[in-house]
Length: 369
Image (cartoon, rainbow, N blue to C red):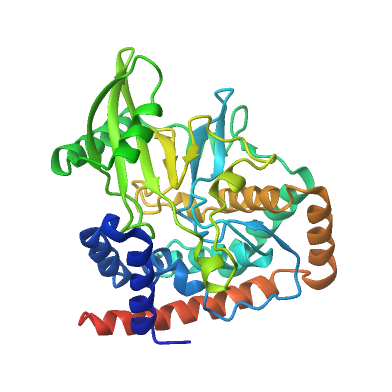
Protein backbone atom coordinates (compact mmCIF):
# COMPACT_ATOMS: atom_id res chain seq x y z
CA UNK A 1 0.00 0.00 0.00
CA UNK A 2 1.00 3.61 -0.50
CA UNK A 3 1.89 5.59 2.64
CA UNK A 4 -1.05 7.15 4.42
CA UNK A 5 0.19 10.63 3.52
CA UNK A 6 0.27 9.80 -0.19
CA UNK A 7 -3.05 7.96 0.02
CA UNK A 8 -4.74 10.92 1.73
CA UNK A 9 -3.48 13.30 -0.96
CA UNK A 10 -4.90 10.99 -3.62
CA UNK A 11 -8.25 10.79 -1.83
CA UNK A 12 -8.43 14.56 -1.33
CA UNK A 13 -7.82 15.12 -5.04
CA UNK A 14 -10.59 12.65 -5.88
CA UNK A 15 -12.99 14.29 -3.41
CA UNK A 16 -12.29 17.76 -4.77
CA UNK A 17 -12.81 16.46 -8.29
CA UNK A 18 -16.19 15.02 -7.30
CA UNK A 19 -17.41 18.09 -5.43
CA UNK A 20 -15.83 20.96 -7.37
CA UNK A 21 -16.91 24.25 -5.86
CA UNK A 22 -18.97 22.45 -3.23
CA UNK A 23 -15.83 21.10 -1.52
CA UNK A 24 -15.71 22.37 2.08
CA UNK A 25 -12.02 22.99 2.73
CA UNK A 26 -12.37 24.09 6.37
CA UNK A 27 -14.46 21.07 7.27
CA UNK A 28 -11.98 18.81 5.51
CA UNK A 29 -9.14 20.30 7.55
CA UNK A 30 -11.14 19.46 10.67
CA UNK A 31 -11.33 15.90 9.38
CA UNK A 32 -7.56 15.75 8.96
CA UNK A 33 -7.10 16.98 12.53
CA UNK A 34 -9.47 14.32 13.84
CA UNK A 35 -7.47 11.66 12.06
CA UNK A 36 -4.57 12.50 14.40
CA UNK A 37 -6.63 12.31 17.60
CA UNK A 38 -6.52 8.53 17.95
CA UNK A 39 -6.88 5.24 16.07
CA UNK A 40 -10.68 5.11 16.47
CA UNK A 41 -11.29 8.64 15.07
CA UNK A 42 -8.76 7.77 12.36
CA UNK A 43 -10.80 4.69 11.43
CA UNK A 44 -13.99 6.74 11.26
CA UNK A 45 -12.41 9.37 9.02
CA UNK A 46 -10.70 7.04 6.54
CA UNK A 47 -13.03 4.41 5.15
CA UNK A 48 -11.39 4.99 1.76
CA UNK A 49 -8.11 3.79 3.31
CA UNK A 50 -9.74 0.70 4.80
CA UNK A 51 -10.77 -0.31 1.27
CA UNK A 52 -7.04 -0.63 0.44
CA UNK A 53 -6.23 -2.96 3.33
CA UNK A 54 -5.61 -6.69 2.65
CA UNK A 55 -9.07 -7.85 3.68
CA UNK A 56 -9.18 -11.25 1.95
CA UNK A 57 -12.42 -13.24 1.89
CA UNK A 58 -12.43 -13.27 -1.92
CA UNK A 59 -14.21 -16.65 -2.01
CA UNK A 60 -17.08 -15.59 0.21
CA UNK A 61 -20.58 -14.69 -0.92
CA UNK A 62 -21.08 -11.07 -1.95
CA UNK A 63 -24.07 -9.21 -0.52
CA UNK A 64 -25.14 -5.59 -0.14
CA UNK A 65 -23.22 -4.43 2.94
CA UNK A 66 -22.77 -1.29 5.03
CA UNK A 67 -19.07 -0.86 4.23
CA UNK A 68 -18.24 2.06 6.50
CA UNK A 69 -19.42 0.29 9.63
CA UNK A 70 -18.24 1.10 13.16
CA UNK A 71 -19.76 1.16 16.62
CA UNK A 72 -20.92 4.79 16.27
CA UNK A 73 -22.72 4.08 13.00
CA UNK A 74 -25.85 2.87 14.82
CA UNK A 75 -28.75 4.69 16.32
CA UNK A 76 -32.49 4.91 16.81
CA UNK A 77 -35.34 6.28 14.70
CA UNK A 78 -39.12 6.09 14.33
CA UNK A 79 -40.52 4.04 11.46
CA UNK A 80 -43.74 4.62 9.49
CA UNK A 81 -45.83 3.13 12.29
CA UNK A 82 -44.13 5.19 14.99
CA UNK A 83 -42.16 2.23 16.36
CA UNK A 84 -38.67 2.91 17.67
CA UNK A 85 -36.05 1.05 15.63
CA UNK A 86 -32.38 0.36 16.34
CA UNK A 87 -29.86 -0.23 13.59
CA UNK A 88 -27.35 1.17 11.13
CA UNK A 89 -28.23 4.81 10.53
CA UNK A 90 -25.65 5.85 7.94
CA UNK A 91 -25.52 3.96 4.64
CA UNK A 92 -23.51 6.45 2.57
CA UNK A 93 -20.86 3.85 1.71
CA UNK A 94 -23.11 0.83 1.13
CA UNK A 95 -21.68 -1.54 -1.49
CA UNK A 96 -21.77 -5.14 -2.63
CA UNK A 97 -18.89 -6.99 -0.96
CA UNK A 98 -18.05 -10.27 0.77
CA UNK A 99 -20.18 -10.69 3.89
CA UNK A 100 -17.37 -10.97 6.52
CA UNK A 101 -16.13 -7.42 5.84
CA UNK A 102 -18.80 -5.66 7.90
CA UNK A 103 -18.24 -7.95 10.88
CA UNK A 104 -14.46 -7.58 10.82
CA UNK A 105 -14.57 -3.79 10.55
CA UNK A 106 -17.19 -3.50 13.29
CA UNK A 107 -15.15 -5.63 15.69
CA UNK A 108 -11.95 -3.77 14.81
CA UNK A 109 -13.72 -0.49 15.57
CA UNK A 110 -14.89 -1.83 18.95
CA UNK A 111 -11.35 -2.92 19.79
CA UNK A 112 -9.92 0.48 18.87
CA UNK A 113 -12.60 2.35 20.81
CA UNK A 114 -12.19 0.17 23.90
CA UNK A 115 -8.40 0.05 24.06
CA UNK A 116 -7.96 3.17 26.19
CA UNK A 117 -10.83 2.42 28.56
CA UNK A 118 -10.49 0.62 31.87
CA UNK A 119 -13.99 -0.81 31.50
CA UNK A 120 -13.59 -2.50 28.13
CA UNK A 121 -14.66 -6.04 27.18
CA UNK A 122 -12.22 -8.45 25.59
CA UNK A 123 -12.15 -9.24 21.89
CA UNK A 124 -13.59 -12.71 22.39
CA UNK A 125 -16.51 -11.38 24.42
CA UNK A 126 -17.31 -8.76 21.80
CA UNK A 127 -16.92 -11.21 18.90
CA UNK A 128 -19.19 -13.74 20.61
CA UNK A 129 -21.93 -11.11 21.04
CA UNK A 130 -21.62 -9.86 17.44
CA UNK A 131 -21.70 -13.34 15.93
CA UNK A 132 -24.62 -14.49 18.07
CA UNK A 133 -26.60 -11.43 17.00
CA UNK A 134 -25.53 -11.89 13.38
CA UNK A 135 -26.81 -15.48 13.33
CA UNK A 136 -30.07 -14.27 14.89
CA UNK A 137 -30.42 -11.64 12.15
CA UNK A 138 -29.78 -14.19 9.40
CA UNK A 139 -32.37 -16.53 10.87
CA UNK A 140 -35.17 -14.01 11.52
CA UNK A 141 -34.35 -11.47 8.76
CA UNK A 142 -36.20 -8.53 10.31
CA UNK A 143 -35.31 -5.18 11.86
CA UNK A 144 -34.58 -4.59 15.55
CA UNK A 145 -37.81 -3.06 16.88
CA UNK A 146 -37.35 -1.72 20.40
CA UNK A 147 -41.02 -1.26 21.29
CA UNK A 148 -42.12 -3.85 23.84
CA UNK A 149 -38.61 -5.07 24.57
CA UNK A 150 -36.68 -5.02 27.81
CA UNK A 151 -33.02 -4.27 28.40
CA UNK A 152 -32.30 -2.45 25.16
CA UNK A 153 -35.32 -0.22 25.69
CA UNK A 154 -33.97 1.01 29.01
CA UNK A 155 -30.49 1.57 27.57
CA UNK A 156 -31.35 3.14 24.22
CA UNK A 157 -34.77 4.74 24.51
CA UNK A 158 -35.16 6.45 27.84
CA UNK A 159 -33.46 9.75 27.09
CA UNK A 160 -33.69 12.34 29.83
CA UNK A 161 -35.25 15.78 29.65
CA UNK A 162 -31.72 17.18 29.97
CA UNK A 163 -30.60 15.14 26.94
CA UNK A 164 -33.50 16.50 24.87
CA UNK A 165 -32.69 20.05 25.91
CA UNK A 166 -28.99 19.55 25.12
CA UNK A 167 -29.85 18.23 21.65
CA UNK A 168 -31.80 21.34 20.69
CA UNK A 169 -29.30 23.68 22.36
CA UNK A 170 -26.44 22.19 20.33
CA UNK A 171 -28.37 22.56 17.07
CA UNK A 172 -29.25 26.17 17.83
CA UNK A 173 -25.58 26.90 18.60
CA UNK A 174 -24.69 25.56 15.16
CA UNK A 175 -27.43 27.74 13.66
CA UNK A 176 -26.06 30.86 15.36
CA UNK A 177 -22.45 30.13 14.36
CA UNK A 178 -22.85 28.64 10.88
CA UNK A 179 -25.68 30.35 9.03
CA UNK A 180 -25.41 29.60 5.34
CA UNK A 181 -27.12 30.00 1.99
CA UNK A 182 -27.00 26.55 0.41
CA UNK A 183 -27.18 26.07 -3.35
CA UNK A 184 -30.70 25.96 -4.73
CA UNK A 185 -31.01 22.16 -4.90
CA UNK A 186 -30.16 21.80 -1.19
CA UNK A 187 -32.65 24.52 -0.26
CA UNK A 188 -35.34 22.78 -2.31
CA UNK A 189 -34.59 19.40 -0.72
CA UNK A 190 -34.78 20.93 2.76
CA UNK A 191 -38.02 22.76 2.01
CA UNK A 192 -39.70 19.62 0.68
CA UNK A 193 -38.58 17.55 3.69
CA UNK A 194 -40.86 19.30 6.20
CA UNK A 195 -44.51 18.50 6.87
CA UNK A 196 -46.98 20.89 5.21
CA UNK A 197 -47.53 23.97 7.30
CA UNK A 198 -44.16 23.94 9.06
CA UNK A 199 -42.52 27.34 9.47
CA UNK A 200 -38.88 27.11 8.38
CA UNK A 201 -35.99 28.96 9.97
CA UNK A 202 -32.68 29.89 8.38
CA UNK A 203 -30.46 27.16 6.94
CA UNK A 204 -27.08 26.50 8.51
CA UNK A 205 -24.04 24.37 7.80
CA UNK A 206 -24.39 21.47 10.19
CA UNK A 207 -21.28 20.24 12.01
CA UNK A 208 -21.56 16.48 12.42
CA UNK A 209 -19.89 13.22 11.53
CA UNK A 210 -16.27 12.55 10.69
CA UNK A 211 -15.98 10.57 7.46
CA UNK A 212 -18.25 12.98 5.58
CA UNK A 213 -16.40 16.17 6.55
CA UNK A 214 -15.59 18.06 3.38
CA UNK A 215 -18.96 17.37 1.79
CA UNK A 216 -21.86 19.84 1.95
CA UNK A 217 -24.20 19.25 4.91
CA UNK A 218 -26.98 21.71 5.74
CA UNK A 219 -29.90 21.76 8.14
CA UNK A 220 -32.97 23.81 9.00
CA UNK A 221 -34.86 24.02 12.29
CA UNK A 222 -38.57 24.60 11.76
CA UNK A 223 -41.61 25.05 13.95
CA UNK A 224 -44.51 22.67 13.47
CA UNK A 225 -47.69 22.73 15.53
CA UNK A 226 -46.08 24.05 18.66
CA UNK A 227 -42.66 22.47 18.66
CA UNK A 228 -39.30 22.35 16.88
CA UNK A 229 -38.58 20.01 13.95
CA UNK A 230 -35.24 19.47 12.25
CA UNK A 231 -34.21 18.26 8.79
CA UNK A 232 -30.74 17.71 7.35
CA UNK A 233 -29.41 17.30 3.82
CA UNK A 234 -26.04 15.81 2.92
CA UNK A 235 -24.25 15.31 -0.39
CA UNK A 236 -23.81 11.70 -1.48
CA UNK A 237 -20.91 10.34 -3.53
CA UNK A 238 -20.07 6.97 -5.07
CA UNK A 239 -19.03 4.52 -2.36
CA UNK A 240 -15.29 4.38 -1.73
CA UNK A 241 -15.50 0.61 -2.13
CA UNK A 242 -16.91 0.86 -5.65
CA UNK A 243 -14.23 3.42 -6.52
CA UNK A 244 -11.27 1.52 -5.02
CA UNK A 245 -12.16 -1.86 -6.52
CA UNK A 246 -12.79 -0.31 -9.92
CA UNK A 247 -16.53 -0.93 -10.23
CA UNK A 248 -17.87 0.66 -13.39
CA UNK A 249 -19.59 2.96 -13.06
CA UNK A 250 -18.88 3.79 -9.41
CA UNK A 251 -22.16 3.71 -7.53
CA UNK A 252 -23.94 5.00 -4.47
CA UNK A 253 -26.35 2.43 -3.01
CA UNK A 254 -27.75 4.40 -0.07
CA UNK A 255 -31.34 4.30 -1.34
CA UNK A 256 -31.13 0.57 -2.10
CA UNK A 257 -29.66 -0.30 1.30
CA UNK A 258 -32.13 1.87 3.24
CA UNK A 259 -35.13 0.25 1.54
CA UNK A 260 -34.18 -3.42 1.99
CA UNK A 261 -37.24 -5.48 2.98
CA UNK A 262 -35.53 -6.44 6.26
CA UNK A 263 -35.35 -2.82 7.41
CA UNK A 264 -37.96 -0.48 8.93
CA UNK A 265 -36.83 2.88 7.55
CA UNK A 266 -37.70 6.34 8.75
CA UNK A 267 -40.45 7.55 6.37
CA UNK A 268 -38.82 10.98 6.27
CA UNK A 269 -35.54 9.58 4.95
CA UNK A 270 -35.11 10.12 1.21
CA UNK A 271 -32.48 10.28 -1.49
CA UNK A 272 -33.11 13.16 -3.88
CA UNK A 273 -30.65 13.00 -6.74
CA UNK A 274 -27.25 12.96 -5.03
CA UNK A 275 -28.61 14.34 -1.73
CA UNK A 276 -29.62 12.35 1.36
CA UNK A 277 -32.44 13.93 3.37
CA UNK A 278 -33.24 12.88 6.90
CA UNK A 279 -35.15 13.84 10.01
CA UNK A 280 -33.20 14.48 13.21
CA UNK A 281 -34.54 14.56 16.76
CA UNK A 282 -33.52 13.35 20.23
CA UNK A 283 -34.94 9.94 19.25
CA UNK A 284 -33.43 9.98 15.75
CA UNK A 285 -29.87 9.91 16.96
CA UNK A 286 -26.56 8.14 16.87
CA UNK A 287 -25.28 6.12 19.80
CA UNK A 288 -21.97 7.81 20.57
CA UNK A 289 -19.37 6.32 22.85
CA UNK A 290 -18.27 9.53 24.57
CA UNK A 291 -21.85 10.70 25.14
CA UNK A 292 -22.93 7.34 26.52
CA UNK A 293 -20.83 7.44 29.69
CA UNK A 294 -22.63 7.61 33.03
CA UNK A 295 -21.76 8.62 36.56
CA UNK A 296 -20.60 6.42 38.19
CA UNK A 297 -18.65 5.12 35.18
CA UNK A 298 -19.89 1.96 33.51
CA UNK A 299 -19.34 0.22 30.22
CA UNK A 300 -20.22 2.63 27.35
CA UNK A 301 -23.40 1.70 25.48
CA UNK A 302 -21.76 0.76 22.15
CA UNK A 303 -19.46 -1.74 23.90
CA UNK A 304 -22.06 -3.54 25.98
CA UNK A 305 -22.67 -7.14 24.87
CA UNK A 306 -26.44 -6.56 24.54
CA UNK A 307 -25.87 -3.64 22.18
CA UNK A 308 -23.16 -5.43 20.21
CA UNK A 309 -25.59 -8.34 19.84
CA UNK A 310 -28.22 -5.96 18.42
CA UNK A 311 -25.63 -4.48 16.04
CA UNK A 312 -24.75 -7.94 14.76
CA UNK A 313 -28.43 -8.79 14.43
CA UNK A 314 -29.16 -5.74 12.27
CA UNK A 315 -26.22 -6.49 9.98
CA UNK A 316 -27.32 -10.11 9.70
CA UNK A 317 -30.81 -9.03 8.65
CA UNK A 318 -29.33 -6.73 6.00
CA UNK A 319 -26.94 -9.34 4.63
CA UNK A 320 -29.71 -11.93 4.64
CA UNK A 321 -32.33 -9.75 2.93
CA UNK A 322 -32.59 -12.47 0.28
CA UNK A 323 -33.35 -15.92 1.65
CA UNK A 324 -30.73 -17.59 -0.54
CA UNK A 325 -28.03 -15.26 0.81
CA UNK A 326 -29.06 -15.89 4.41
CA UNK A 327 -28.89 -19.65 3.87
CA UNK A 328 -25.51 -19.50 2.12
CA UNK A 329 -23.94 -17.31 4.82
CA UNK A 330 -25.33 -19.46 7.63
CA UNK A 331 -23.87 -22.56 5.94
CA UNK A 332 -20.50 -20.82 5.53
CA UNK A 333 -20.45 -19.86 9.20
CA UNK A 334 -21.17 -23.44 10.17
CA UNK A 335 -18.65 -25.08 7.84
CA UNK A 336 -15.79 -22.58 7.55
CA UNK A 337 -16.02 -20.24 10.54
CA UNK A 338 -16.96 -22.08 13.73
CA UNK A 339 -16.20 -20.21 16.92
CA UNK A 340 -14.85 -16.66 17.16
CA UNK A 341 -11.13 -17.07 16.43
CA UNK A 342 -11.40 -16.27 12.71
CA UNK A 343 -13.15 -12.98 13.49
CA UNK A 344 -11.00 -11.88 16.42
CA UNK A 345 -7.74 -12.72 14.63
CA UNK A 346 -8.64 -10.83 11.45
CA UNK A 347 -10.07 -7.83 13.33
CA UNK A 348 -6.96 -7.66 15.53
CA UNK A 349 -4.61 -7.71 12.53
CA UNK A 350 -6.54 -4.98 10.75
CA UNK A 351 -6.80 -2.89 13.93
CA UNK A 352 -3.00 -3.04 14.16
CA UNK A 353 -2.73 -1.76 10.57
CA UNK A 354 -5.04 1.12 11.50
CA UNK A 355 -2.81 1.91 14.49
CA UNK A 356 0.30 1.98 12.30
CA UNK A 357 -1.40 4.24 9.78
CA UNK A 358 -2.56 6.51 12.59
CA UNK A 359 0.93 6.74 14.09
CA UNK A 360 2.38 7.64 10.69
CA UNK A 361 -0.33 10.23 10.10
CA UNK A 362 0.09 11.75 13.56
CA UNK A 363 3.84 12.00 13.03
CA UNK A 364 3.36 13.66 9.65
CA UNK A 365 1.22 16.33 11.32
CA UNK A 366 3.92 17.07 13.88
CA UNK A 367 1.79 15.77 16.73
CA UNK A 368 3.81 12.71 17.74
CA UNK A 369 3.88 12.02 21.48
